Image 1 (tube, one colour):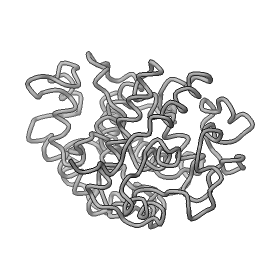
Image 2 (tube, one colour):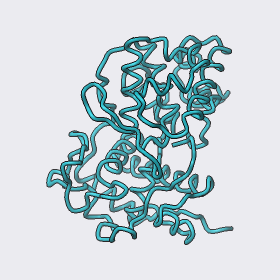
Image 3 (cartoon, one colour):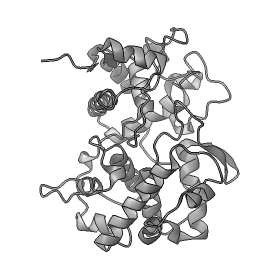
Image 4 (tube, helix red, strand yellow):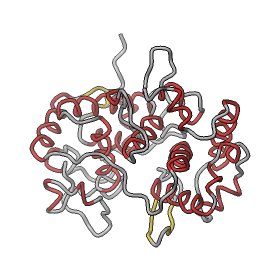
Length: 333
């Protein structure tokens, strides 16, 4: 049997579990949206924005950034709030019929000219959603929820996660976008699932980077390790191996802490995105650029510094030795 490219480091896992058992973790929830929309429109807006939420702060290229609702935002935050602002003026912008005819010009207008990688690809993903929803006779995504009888997974394949996979944007075998979309719908109080235990963590490159630096992901393949150290492009298979291992790690830690995998994802993702950054990790102290949400300023971060600093084997590594994001031109994350 071939050696797995990525393994879980049991000792490092135990260190993270022990740390979080001592300081606790917040419950998972999304930041409050700055405007109110109807539940139907909000559900469609979540579906649309998650569908095109990949590589908005790319390893190579310009991050999606801008001022929206009087605040500087970047990546996912700017994407979501730009669509919120557009839907406030015209809620039909996220309707299935409009999505089926969506244009690059409309996307650029919503984003106020802020550059986003591969816009044609993103518009095609929206076309796919709009077309398939129109063919199914769905006026909003709540139709899928009702048809699945609130179940994430069903033996006959008609569960929410299973049906979402019919959309190209949501066809990831690890269900990153599907898990994230469902977590948002749950956390906003729009959907309640019969089987919430089937909601997995929506793993992306931020968490892969954090868990690799913490030593929880042991990169057994020397070629892959070198790619991550140098920031080189990884193959689809290598990217999948990293995310699958990260998924398993998050589920393991969540189970040990008796919290949901979604709650564990939000904690890892927030620290990875704000403290364990690509080029300026806050190992010894956070500077004014740190925008970690208040609810995650726990434990040692009150000092303030990254909460994982004391258990991180990468903390004292010089730049150029710390592992970077798994760079891949993918639509999954």
